[in-house]
Amino acid sequence: MDNLKVIVNEFFPVYESDTGARLVNARDLHTQLVVGKDFTNWIKGRIEKYGFVDKEDYFLTVIKTGERKNVLKHEYWIRLDTAKELAMVQNNEMGRAIRKYFIEVEKRFKESQPKTQAEMLLQYAEQMVRNERENAERDQKIRQLETGVETLAQNLTAVPDHRKVIDNVNEYARWTRVGHNEVYNSIYSILKAQHGIDVKARVENERRKLNAEYYQRTGKLYAESTLKQKVNGIDVMVRMSWLDKFNQILAGFLTKAKVPTT
Figure 1 (tube, rainbow, N blue to C red):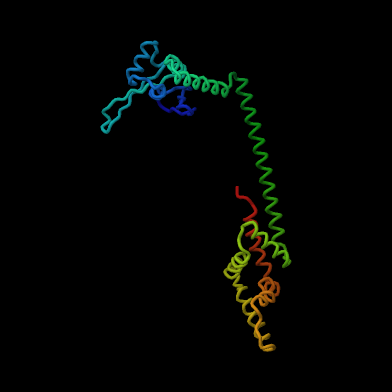
Figure 2 (cartoon, helix red, strand yellow):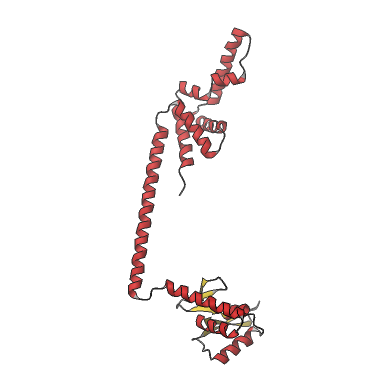
């Protein structure tokens, strides 16, 4: 049998041929029924006793096996009705359970198949309606997503207020669970690579200058925490008109973090 496909595989496989015949491998059935006889004698005995007809109730195939392909193996593919009868005449609990399984398979198959041309047309029309509805919903979601991305990008790349930039950094840190310093340092690295702007070096220079002036006046140095309060990256970028470039990079980070991938 060629082009067999499994249509159900809960108890054991039920196949469908390219002509629509629903079949069971007799070896599988023999194994599940826990028959005392060997397979070959059992299947030949059942065929003879119940008058099963080749190419009507079952299909016999012969395949070559073994390393040299010199061993012939006979496979019996039995129709579902035949398999149901064999399970019934076995007259044990397993046979009854398997017969119920086959009945359930038939029931499912019949329910899934249209009975008339009108039903086929109705089923096709219903599927077309479902497809159109799904396409419309998908298109609407895409439009909403595109609008959301555009709005988000416009809001994020507008001329920034330093407080809004800080809020955006905090928001990105919450979304990604990345530390604030790591966010700043990542963007500083991109600023330096893309624009030659070294925010960290500028901050350090201004802090050293401020500390030197304070030492000349008082003979003391600022505490590290005080220096960080007096000079920080945001302040430097505002004075040097770098904040817009920082915010553009941050906007890209936020957009990527907040917009789901599809």
